[in-house]
Amino acid sequence: MRKILFISIILGSLASCNDGDVIVTDFNFINNNLKTCGGIGSYTFYNINNSSAAESISLVLETNDILFIDSGINEYLLNGTSYWVNYRKYDADIDDNYFCSSIPPVSPNVINEYYGASGLVQLKTIVVKDDEDGIIEDTTSELDSDNDGLLDFFDNDDDGDNVPTINELGPDFLEGISEFPLDTDGDLIPDYLDVDDDNDLILTRYEDANGDLDPTNDFTTPNIPNYLNENIADNNIIDQYRIHTYQLTSDIELIINNLILVNGSEQITKETMVLGTQNNVIDGTVSLTPEF
Image 1: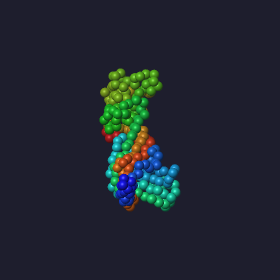
Image 2: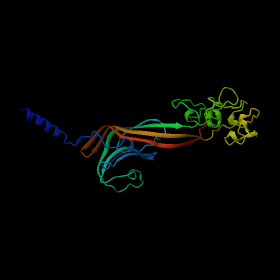
Image 3: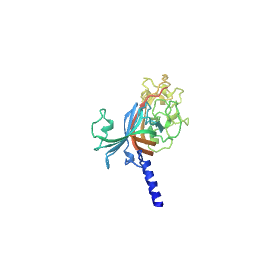
């Protein structure tokens, strides 16, 4: 009697799965194989596996959010229209052109496809900004010495005097001979943080005779620029910043929580679906002119 009852329970369990509800615990995607293309308006993220099976998982985010330039987590609820996911199997290997080409390729053929019915997308971004100005600075600090909107750790002109910080430190400091940056006027404020480097009561930024936003090339006395010559008080009011630059690198991790993929009556459930990570999504120089 117990054997009959046990068999009945198994049969009952199998019958309850006939509605196509399938629980899958893993996909064979390499974590660091996440790639991106597109940009503001429509970003595409995808991970391809050609090692054991030609398959892909992709996410499209149709958003005007500017991604990858600030550290943090962006969240999006899948809706099947502006935020959507596809899992596909193919009859042959695929490459990056499948997702990033302006004209979608006609091959390989899709032999199976699931759509994201629901899920919460979490895009984690880690950004490193470096002004390469010769000063080791706290990247967690909110200090903005010149109030130009750029925090000191990625502001290559910390005092806003239109002389880059690296040009105000002095060779002894840069070469490690001295632990103290250059202080031309001896007021205990290093030049890179001093808005009046020669203490002649004229702002360094104003001692720019030719108005080219570069005080370093204005001389009345040979070999000493006016902004470092206390005997020259050249006052040319310039309330404008020169172009600032910094290096930016951006790494991302993309996961989808409580993902449900459907294909007709079939359903794949993933409590946490890791689409992967990508380093150096952005790796380059940012150039901008802060508003005064």
